[in-house]
Image 1 (tube, rainbow over the protein chains, first blue to last red):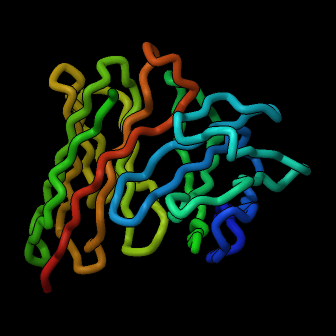
Image 2: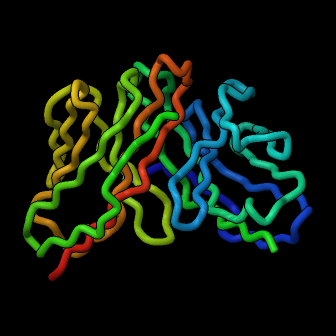
Amino acid sequence: EPEVTQTPSHQVTQMGQEVILRCVPISNHLYFYWYRQILGQKVEFLVSFYNNEISEKSEIFDDQFSVERPDGSNFTLKIRSTKLEDSAMYFCASSRTSGVFTYNEQFFGPGTRLTVL
Amino acid sequence: QKEVEQNSGPLSVPEGAIASLNCTYSDRGSQSFFWYRQYSGKSPELIMSIYSNGDKEDGRFTAQLNKASQYVSLLIRDSQPSDSATYLCAVLEGIYGGSQGNLIFGKGTKLSVKP
């Protein structure tokens, strides 16, 4: 069964460093998402992406964050200058459809645990 | 602020019993609702989606939706120890927010099934 994959599974970085988290969405899916979950807290939406551009972003997704689809399979999240409060699990998700009236089932990858020291 | 509320639990049920998990949401424009299962340290796994009022059954799982009451529930029949996990209710942000499809999650209900 096709699944979303993410690398690395765990990333440790120093405050102020740049990190790139990588995702390979399910191959016939067109919509991609990043969510994060700080330990013990809710899963929070960061950004959605379709047709090589951002569809929507949350207040969390400030200028320090960017997303890219550098080729036909990868989808990346870059944090330019990490802060201590960026420590969290970052989940990539993908869906075949989007929009509020369609069956927007989002499937999550295994996540990348980001630790900022 | 759009909210999805769940009782954090823990909800403890004996093996073989029915587990009942509940969720309320604030956004009246929401049309799509999901239940995810999350084992400790793992990612959310989609187990049910529901879009219309009423019940939807899939194996041992039944999702129930009442849009008028802004209420979603999940029943797990014949609960097994392997069902022990945190169950996340997720709501697709509604049309009035202009959303393209981001999910709003509750904090989750921790379920423990005792052998």
